[in-house]
Image 1: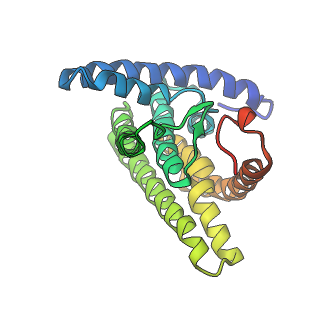
Image 2: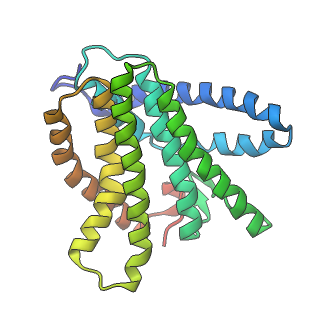
Image 3: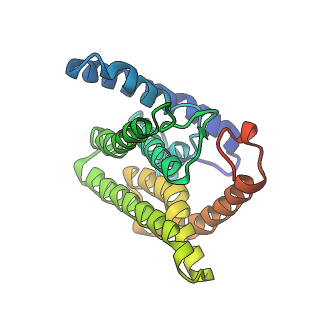
Length: 249
């Protein structure tokens, strides 16, 4: 259970270590499974699973935070749910880098970068799709009461849908009159719900949260998520690529 004295930086650092451990467990399991299909998949999948690491893991941490808002002690299974959000994030980033024609991500070449551009893009699309499917499977595999898990999965799938629709609207925005309302809608769908509200809510739902708490998370998370997106846009224009680890404009 969180208290008013909780140091988020320390909390984040401790959470990341355990989320990374869960990601490593998943990586080992998937590597063994994919090798059964073909040895050729081994190196391809290693590049994909390596891409799980190196990010800030804010979303995974917020899954745990949402759970800890409800429960006195942290269940080990919540780290699996946190890892699910990080794998989803990786999948979205891979697709996003293709659309934005970004060359770097997390200090490495973006997943679609290859001497054969079409081959690189084709494989990256597959990797991104894996991120979307594996994240759901990992959440399904979490050992929580079935009624609670179904509720969390429903929320999780809605977050996926909203994020994709937000991306579609963002791509379409240069072709329409851009109003403040449209910009805010994109920020809510692409960032606020996916980065703040979604992870915290899924964690809280798995912890047995009330409807009132989920509504409170939404009221707190939406403006914070919009602020997060504005800051990210500023860094995307004026930030240093080496420091950020990803392409800038």
